[in-house]
Amino acid sequence: MFPSIRRGMIHALVVVLSLSAIEAANAYPDQPIKIIVTFPPGGSADIVIRALQPALAESLNQPIVVENRAGAGGNIGIGVVAQAAPDGYTLGVAAAGVLTVNPHLNRAAMPFDPVKDLAPVTMLAEIPFVLVSSQQSAIASVADLIAKAKAQPQGLSIGHGGNGTAMHLTSALFNQKAGVGIQLIAYRGTAPATTDVLAGHVPLAVLDIPASKQLIGDGKLKALGVSAAKRVAFLPDVPTLAEQGLSGFESVGWFGIVAPAGTPPEIIGKLNAAFVKALSDPAAIEKIRVLGAEPAPTSPEAFAKFIQSESAKWGKLIAEAGIKSE
Image 1 (cartoon, rainbow, N blue to C red):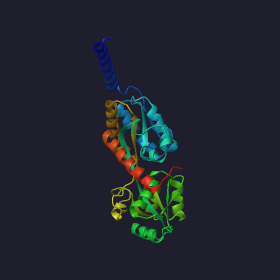
Image 2: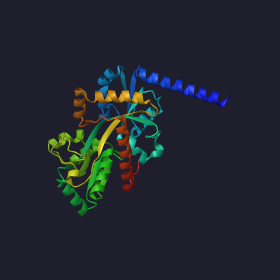
Image 3: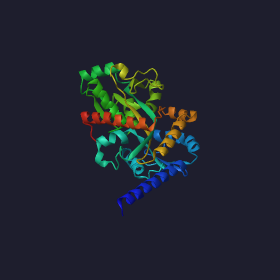
Image 4: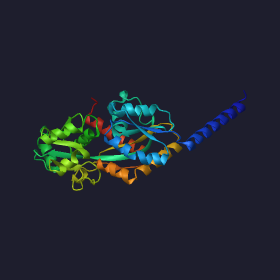
Protein backbone atom coordinates (compact mmCIF):
# COMPACT_ATOMS: atom_id res chain seq x y z
CA MET A 1 0.00 0.00 0.00
CA PHE A 2 1.30 3.44 -0.95
CA PRO A 3 2.38 5.55 2.07
CA SER A 4 0.14 8.43 0.98
CA ILE A 5 -2.92 6.15 0.86
CA ARG A 6 -2.07 4.65 4.24
CA ARG A 7 -1.70 8.12 5.78
CA GLY A 8 -5.04 9.10 4.30
CA MET A 9 -6.73 6.03 5.80
CA ILE A 10 -5.22 6.70 9.21
CA HIS A 11 -6.34 10.33 9.04
CA ALA A 12 -9.86 9.26 8.08
CA LEU A 13 -9.95 6.77 10.97
CA VAL A 14 -8.83 9.44 13.43
CA VAL A 15 -11.54 11.77 12.15
CA VAL A 16 -14.21 9.06 12.50
CA LEU A 17 -13.10 8.20 16.04
CA SER A 18 -13.01 11.88 17.02
CA LEU A 19 -16.50 12.45 15.66
CA SER A 20 -17.75 9.35 17.50
CA ALA A 21 -16.27 10.64 20.77
CA ILE A 22 -17.87 14.05 20.23
CA GLU A 23 -21.25 12.46 19.50
CA ALA A 24 -20.98 10.31 22.63
CA ALA A 25 -20.10 13.35 24.73
CA ASN A 26 -22.98 15.34 23.27
CA ALA A 27 -25.41 12.51 24.06
CA TYR A 28 -24.08 12.14 27.61
CA PRO A 29 -25.67 11.13 29.88
CA ASP A 30 -28.24 8.68 28.53
CA GLN A 31 -28.14 6.10 31.35
CA PRO A 32 -27.83 6.02 35.17
CA ILE A 33 -24.57 7.26 36.70
CA LYS A 34 -22.91 5.23 39.45
CA ILE A 35 -20.93 6.97 42.20
CA ILE A 36 -18.71 4.75 44.33
CA VAL A 37 -18.20 5.93 47.91
CA THR A 38 -15.07 4.53 49.55
CA PHE A 39 -16.58 4.61 53.06
CA PRO A 40 -19.41 2.71 54.76
CA PRO A 41 -22.97 4.08 54.72
CA GLY A 42 -23.53 6.88 57.23
CA GLY A 43 -20.06 8.40 57.04
CA SER A 44 -19.41 12.01 56.09
CA ALA A 45 -18.60 11.32 52.43
CA ASP A 46 -21.64 9.08 52.09
CA ILE A 47 -23.96 11.67 53.65
CA VAL A 48 -22.58 14.45 51.43
CA ILE A 49 -23.03 12.55 48.18
CA ARG A 50 -26.55 11.45 49.14
CA ALA A 51 -27.38 15.07 50.00
CA LEU A 52 -26.34 16.00 46.44
CA GLN A 53 -28.19 13.09 44.82
CA PRO A 54 -31.52 14.85 44.07
CA ALA A 55 -29.92 17.97 42.57
CA LEU A 56 -27.48 15.89 40.50
CA ALA A 57 -30.27 13.70 39.14
CA GLU A 58 -32.22 16.79 38.16
CA SER A 59 -29.26 18.49 36.45
CA LEU A 60 -28.13 15.39 34.56
CA ASN A 61 -31.64 14.04 33.98
CA GLN A 62 -30.54 10.56 35.00
CA PRO A 63 -30.73 8.45 38.17
CA ILE A 64 -27.68 8.69 40.45
CA VAL A 65 -26.81 5.33 42.00
CA VAL A 66 -24.61 5.39 45.12
CA GLU A 67 -22.54 2.28 45.85
CA ASN A 68 -20.46 1.87 49.02
CA ARG A 69 -17.14 0.04 48.62
CA ALA A 70 -15.10 0.58 51.75
CA GLY A 71 -11.73 -0.84 52.68
CA ALA A 72 -7.96 -0.48 52.32
CA GLY A 73 -8.02 3.25 53.00
CA GLY A 74 -10.09 3.90 49.88
CA ASN A 75 -7.88 1.84 47.56
CA ILE A 76 -10.58 -0.74 46.83
CA GLY A 77 -13.33 1.64 45.74
CA ILE A 78 -11.14 4.03 43.79
CA GLY A 79 -9.38 1.04 42.20
CA VAL A 80 -12.76 0.06 40.72
CA VAL A 81 -13.20 3.60 39.36
CA ALA A 82 -9.70 3.62 37.84
CA GLN A 83 -10.46 0.40 35.95
CA ALA A 84 -13.91 1.45 34.74
CA ALA A 85 -14.71 2.57 31.20
CA PRO A 86 -13.87 6.28 30.74
CA ASP A 87 -17.41 7.16 29.70
CA GLY A 88 -18.64 9.21 32.66
CA TYR A 89 -20.93 6.52 34.04
CA THR A 90 -18.68 5.40 36.92
CA LEU A 91 -17.37 8.03 39.32
CA GLY A 92 -15.77 7.87 42.75
CA VAL A 93 -15.77 9.91 45.94
CA ALA A 94 -12.08 10.10 46.80
CA ALA A 95 -10.81 11.38 50.13
CA ALA A 96 -7.48 13.03 50.86
CA GLY A 97 -5.91 9.80 52.06
CA VAL A 98 -6.34 7.70 48.95
CA LEU A 99 -5.12 10.42 46.59
CA THR A 100 -2.37 12.16 48.56
CA VAL A 101 -1.33 10.01 51.54
CA ASN A 102 -1.57 6.32 50.59
CA PRO A 103 0.91 6.70 47.69
CA HIS A 104 3.58 7.83 50.15
CA LEU A 105 2.84 5.16 52.76
CA ASN A 106 2.60 2.01 50.65
CA ARG A 107 2.64 2.67 46.92
CA ALA A 108 3.15 -1.01 46.14
CA ALA A 109 -0.22 -1.90 47.72
CA MET A 110 -2.17 0.50 45.53
CA PRO A 111 -3.94 -1.04 42.50
CA PHE A 112 -3.84 2.24 40.57
CA ASP A 113 -1.84 5.43 40.06
CA PRO A 114 -3.74 8.45 41.49
CA VAL A 115 -2.30 10.76 38.83
CA LYS A 116 -2.22 8.58 35.71
CA ASP A 117 -5.41 6.55 36.23
CA LEU A 118 -7.87 9.18 37.44
CA ALA A 119 -9.37 12.42 36.14
CA PRO A 120 -10.32 15.03 38.80
CA VAL A 121 -13.84 16.47 38.44
CA THR A 122 -14.33 18.71 41.48
CA MET A 123 -13.70 19.03 45.16
CA LEU A 124 -16.86 18.44 47.21
CA ALA A 125 -16.26 19.50 50.79
CA GLU A 126 -13.66 20.25 53.44
CA ILE A 127 -13.77 19.20 57.10
CA PRO A 128 -11.36 21.00 59.46
CA PHE A 129 -9.97 19.41 62.62
CA VAL A 130 -9.60 20.72 66.14
CA LEU A 131 -6.85 20.09 68.69
CA VAL A 132 -8.46 19.47 72.08
CA SER A 133 -7.30 18.78 75.61
CA SER A 134 -9.12 16.85 78.31
CA GLN A 135 -10.67 18.61 81.28
CA GLN A 136 -8.25 16.69 83.50
CA SER A 137 -5.32 18.32 81.71
CA ALA A 138 -3.91 21.64 82.88
CA ILE A 139 -3.26 22.62 79.25
CA ALA A 140 -5.49 25.51 78.27
CA SER A 141 -3.75 26.95 75.20
CA VAL A 142 -1.32 26.13 72.42
CA ALA A 143 1.33 28.18 74.22
CA ASP A 144 0.82 26.05 77.35
CA LEU A 145 1.09 22.90 75.28
CA ILE A 146 4.31 23.87 73.52
CA ALA A 147 5.93 25.00 76.77
CA LYS A 148 5.04 21.73 78.51
CA ALA A 149 6.12 19.66 75.52
CA LYS A 150 9.55 21.31 75.50
CA ALA A 151 9.95 20.99 79.27
CA GLN A 152 8.76 17.35 79.37
CA PRO A 153 9.46 15.81 75.93
CA GLN A 154 8.11 12.38 76.91
CA GLY A 155 5.28 13.54 79.14
CA LEU A 156 2.51 14.23 76.60
CA SER A 157 0.60 12.37 73.91
CA ILE A 158 -1.91 13.20 71.21
CA GLY A 159 -4.60 10.70 70.24
CA HIS A 160 -5.80 10.54 66.63
CA GLY A 161 -8.09 8.44 64.44
CA GLY A 162 -5.58 6.01 62.96
CA ASN A 163 -2.26 5.56 61.21
CA GLY A 164 -2.06 7.51 57.98
CA THR A 165 -5.33 9.35 58.52
CA ALA A 166 -5.62 13.10 58.03
CA MET A 167 -5.87 13.46 61.82
CA HIS A 168 -2.60 11.55 62.22
CA LEU A 169 -0.87 13.81 59.73
CA THR A 170 -2.35 16.88 61.39
CA SER A 171 -0.83 15.73 64.69
CA ALA A 172 2.53 15.12 63.03
CA LEU A 173 2.36 18.54 61.37
CA PHE A 174 1.77 20.10 64.80
CA ASN A 175 4.93 18.45 66.11
CA GLN A 176 6.90 19.68 63.12
CA LYS A 177 5.61 23.26 63.17
CA ALA A 178 5.92 23.58 66.97
CA GLY A 179 9.35 21.96 67.09
CA VAL A 180 8.25 19.37 69.65
CA GLY A 181 8.16 15.59 69.84
CA ILE A 182 4.83 14.76 71.43
CA GLN A 183 3.99 11.04 71.25
CA LEU A 184 1.24 10.27 68.72
CA ILE A 185 -1.25 7.56 69.69
CA ALA A 186 -3.19 5.82 66.90
CA TYR A 187 -6.74 4.67 67.59
CA ARG A 188 -9.04 2.65 65.36
CA GLY A 189 -11.23 5.58 64.45
CA THR A 190 -12.31 8.89 65.92
CA ALA A 191 -14.78 7.43 68.42
CA PRO A 192 -12.26 5.61 70.65
CA ALA A 193 -9.88 8.59 70.51
CA THR A 194 -12.74 10.82 71.68
CA THR A 195 -13.64 8.41 74.47
CA ASP A 196 -10.07 8.31 75.79
CA VAL A 197 -9.49 12.06 75.74
CA LEU A 198 -12.83 12.57 77.52
CA ALA A 199 -11.76 10.13 80.21
CA GLY A 200 -8.33 11.72 80.52
CA HIS A 201 -6.51 8.55 79.43
CA VAL A 202 -4.79 10.67 76.79
CA PRO A 203 -4.34 14.40 77.49
CA LEU A 204 -4.78 15.63 73.91
CA ALA A 205 -6.46 14.61 70.67
CA VAL A 206 -6.97 15.82 67.13
CA LEU A 207 -10.65 15.30 66.33
CA ASP A 208 -13.01 16.25 63.54
CA ILE A 209 -15.70 18.84 64.19
CA PRO A 210 -18.71 16.45 64.28
CA ALA A 211 -17.05 14.34 66.98
CA SER A 212 -16.11 17.30 69.16
CA LYS A 213 -18.39 20.32 68.63
CA GLN A 214 -21.02 19.36 71.19
CA LEU A 215 -18.45 18.17 73.72
CA ILE A 216 -16.60 21.48 73.42
CA GLY A 217 -19.85 23.42 73.76
CA ASP A 218 -20.75 21.44 76.88
CA GLY A 219 -17.35 22.17 78.42
CA LYS A 220 -16.27 18.52 78.40
CA LEU A 221 -13.30 19.19 76.14
CA LYS A 222 -11.09 22.27 75.78
CA ALA A 223 -10.56 23.46 72.21
CA LEU A 224 -6.99 24.68 71.74
CA GLY A 225 -7.04 25.48 68.03
CA VAL A 226 -8.53 24.58 64.66
CA SER A 227 -6.42 23.24 61.85
CA ALA A 228 -7.90 25.26 58.98
CA ALA A 229 -6.26 28.39 57.57
CA LYS A 230 -9.20 30.49 58.82
CA ARG A 231 -11.51 30.23 61.80
CA VAL A 232 -14.47 27.96 61.20
CA ALA A 233 -18.13 28.92 61.54
CA PHE A 234 -18.83 25.93 63.79
CA LEU A 235 -16.33 27.09 66.44
CA PRO A 236 -16.01 30.85 65.81
CA ASP A 237 -14.33 31.59 69.15
CA VAL A 238 -11.58 29.03 68.70
CA PRO A 239 -8.42 30.51 67.08
CA THR A 240 -6.56 28.71 64.34
CA LEU A 241 -3.23 27.05 65.07
CA ALA A 242 -1.66 29.46 62.59
CA GLU A 243 -2.95 32.41 64.64
CA GLN A 244 -1.14 31.02 67.67
CA GLY A 245 2.35 31.09 66.25
CA LEU A 246 2.37 28.04 63.96
CA SER A 247 2.84 30.01 60.76
CA GLY A 248 1.37 28.46 57.63
CA PHE A 249 -0.40 25.67 59.53
CA GLU A 250 -3.24 24.28 57.45
CA SER A 251 -4.67 20.78 57.46
CA VAL A 252 -8.21 19.76 56.58
CA GLY A 253 -9.96 16.59 55.64
CA TRP A 254 -11.50 16.75 52.18
CA PHE A 255 -13.04 14.64 49.48
CA GLY A 256 -13.91 15.12 45.85
CA ILE A 257 -15.15 13.45 42.68
CA VAL A 258 -12.88 11.59 40.28
CA ALA A 259 -13.53 9.75 37.01
CA PRO A 260 -11.40 7.23 35.11
CA ALA A 261 -8.52 8.74 33.18
CA GLY A 262 -9.39 9.26 29.53
CA THR A 263 -12.91 10.46 30.22
CA PRO A 264 -13.60 13.07 27.50
CA PRO A 265 -13.16 16.69 28.64
CA GLU A 266 -16.69 17.50 27.47
CA ILE A 267 -18.10 14.90 29.86
CA ILE A 268 -15.86 16.07 32.70
CA GLY A 269 -17.17 19.59 32.04
CA LYS A 270 -20.81 18.47 32.19
CA LEU A 271 -20.18 16.59 35.44
CA ASN A 272 -18.33 19.51 36.97
CA ALA A 273 -21.18 21.90 36.14
CA ALA A 274 -23.74 19.52 37.67
CA PHE A 275 -21.76 19.06 40.90
CA VAL A 276 -21.01 22.77 41.27
CA LYS A 277 -24.72 23.54 40.83
CA ALA A 278 -25.71 20.82 43.33
CA LEU A 279 -23.25 22.20 45.89
CA SER A 280 -25.09 25.54 45.74
CA ASP A 281 -28.46 23.94 46.56
CA PRO A 282 -29.63 25.31 49.97
CA ALA A 283 -31.00 21.94 51.12
CA ALA A 284 -27.72 20.20 50.29
CA ILE A 285 -25.64 22.95 51.92
CA GLU A 286 -27.63 22.60 55.15
CA LYS A 287 -27.07 18.84 55.28
CA ILE A 288 -23.35 19.26 54.58
CA ARG A 289 -22.86 21.92 57.24
CA VAL A 290 -24.59 19.78 59.86
CA LEU A 291 -21.58 17.48 59.48
CA GLY A 292 -19.19 20.30 60.30
CA ALA A 293 -18.15 20.39 56.65
CA GLU A 294 -18.08 23.24 54.15
CA PRO A 295 -18.97 22.90 50.45
CA ALA A 296 -15.84 23.51 48.37
CA PRO A 297 -16.56 23.20 44.64
CA THR A 298 -13.68 23.75 42.21
CA SER A 299 -12.90 23.46 38.52
CA PRO A 300 -11.30 20.19 37.38
CA GLU A 301 -8.02 22.04 36.80
CA ALA A 302 -8.02 23.61 40.27
CA PHE A 303 -8.81 20.25 41.87
CA ALA A 304 -5.92 18.62 39.99
CA LYS A 305 -3.50 21.31 41.18
CA PHE A 306 -4.78 20.99 44.76
CA ILE A 307 -4.24 17.23 44.71
CA GLN A 308 -0.68 17.74 43.46
CA SER A 309 0.13 20.32 46.15
CA GLU A 310 -1.40 18.21 48.93
CA SER A 311 0.49 15.13 47.77
CA ALA A 312 3.78 17.02 47.79
CA LYS A 313 3.05 18.51 51.21
CA TRP A 314 2.12 15.24 52.91
CA GLY A 315 4.77 13.22 51.10
CA LYS A 316 7.43 15.55 52.48
CA LEU A 317 6.00 15.33 56.02
CA ILE A 318 5.70 11.54 55.88
CA ALA A 319 9.33 11.24 54.83
CA GLU A 320 10.64 13.73 57.38
CA ALA A 321 8.57 12.32 60.27
CA GLY A 322 9.35 8.72 59.35
CA ILE A 323 5.67 7.75 59.23
CA LYS A 324 5.17 4.15 58.11
CA SER A 325 2.14 2.15 57.04
CA GLU A 326 0.83 -0.37 59.53
